Image 1 (cartoon, rainbow, N blue to C red):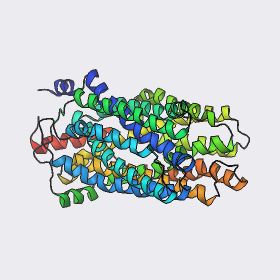
Image 2 (spheres, rainbow, N blue to C red):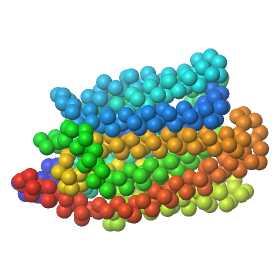
Image 3 (cartoon, rainbow, N blue to C red):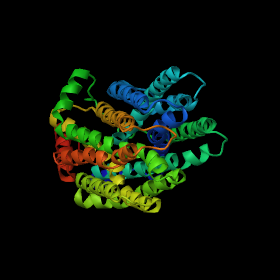
Image 4 (cartoon, rainbow, N blue to C red):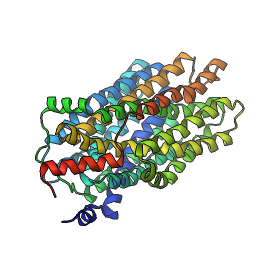
Length: 452
């Protein structure tokens, strides 16, 4: 079989690409509802102190991060008639929806018990989420082998991911406001979102097959997996860059609610602000995929993050900014933020081949587990940083804020995140895998194994 025929047969159909991609609507609907609104829900609705709410984020997400590599290890050892990864999606969909509801159930308990309830329910949710989401993420390398095909598939996935983000960002507050009080509104909204997510995950499960089965040399030993990971310098730099960048992006997202409510005094425009951010991100993803074919995934990611930093700096220094101006600036920021959603996931797929090329170890699930580990660390640190910063600057929920608190909210949404994102951009300079290098690695792997 010649290379052209092989590539044609390995190319995913539109149905498969859409079926895989749509799964991220579910995961991003749930996780971005928590990322964008849960800290606000804890402080202003369930009435937990800002610092205490930050601790809930830190502990829950770090726990979630800690178990992700273990889940990746479990994936590599799973063998069923549905494959290695898809069973986790099938059997985890309904429990995930139930756990999402529990986060926002907000029982009538005392302040101390509220903290305990928030901690326990968010821990459980993050655990179940990890057992469903890590296998889904790891499917990329199994569905597509060629580097640009992975970018194309990840483009489908991240387009749907941004749709999920958009639904979480834009629909949450309007649905909540349909009810007489915010507690009831968040409860009903969590039920609706949970049911939608469960249905979509099962649909995604049914739409794809694990086309490229792992090779017989797939590594099972945890210690050897860890040793190979430490030799995978592109993966290490990518993870540290993703963590640093993620802290910045998520801290900005968390603080938008507070900025519109207290600094601008226009809480009703929060949905419009998030809509402009995420609609712009969705719109430019196909363009970024085209650009990446010319300048590479790494350079495209660095360019997008630079745009995002520039907009945050502008927002900070425009002191008399109007809500409309901010919404428009956030739309521009969304064009840069799209690269953060798109390229890291395509780049980590290439590091799977790097491990096999450099260390002779196939560790697909293991690497994806550690990569999602990095994502959860970023979310943990962002939630903790956001809550701690609000508390440090003297934030008081549902009250007029002091000038110091207002300036603190401004800093927490702009310059503080910029510092983290800038570090992430610098770390990307040390990520070496280009399309040319990836093709060379794949060819050498084929020659070693005797593949044609």
